[in-house]
Image (cartoon, rainbow, N blue to C red; front, side):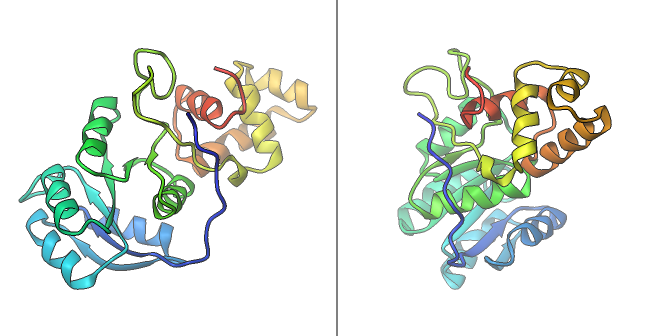
Length: 225
C-alpha cells in the first residue's frame, strides 16, 4: 500500500548527520536547512552514541557503512537506549533485503545517498509524522512492483506535488513509454522543451534512470502498474 503525499510541516526538526564523508554532510545540510536545523555531524560510528545523547536531536540520519561501528549495530543500540529518537538510514544499497534488515532493526526510514532534495525533505516529514519511509529506488521484489509481494517493504513516493503540472504531464507520458518526439507532439510543445522538463524532473526527484522514473510514476499514482 502506498501512503499519500503530505504537506511539509513548518515545525523545524533538530537533526544529527552520521556519515564519514564531510561533503555528504554539507550537501544534506544545504538541502534541509532551513527550515530544519543540523545540530551536529559525526564521521566515526564510535562517536555517534555520545553525540546523540549530548545533543538530543529529533532525528538521526545514519550511514549504514560507518567506520568504527556498523550502522545497523548502532541502530539497534540507539533504538534500545533512545526509543523516541527517529532514525533514517542512508545507504548506496538499492537491494530490497537491506531495507528490510534496516526496518527490522528499528529504522523509521531508508534513503539512498543519491536521493534528491525533494525526496530527502519528504522522508524527514514522513518519519517525523510517525510513518515509515522507504525510497522508491529500492529494487522491485519478486512481484514486480515497488515492494514486491504482500509482506514486503512498503514504498512511499516523494510528493508528486513538488512537480509542476507540465512536469507531471511529461513524467506520465515518459512512464507510459512515449518518446521525446511523441510527447512533444502530444502536448504541442517543442522537443527541446520536453528535454528541459525531463531534466528538471530528474533533478527535482533525484532519479537518474528511466526505470526509476517509471517506478516513481507508478508509486505516485500517475500511471498504472
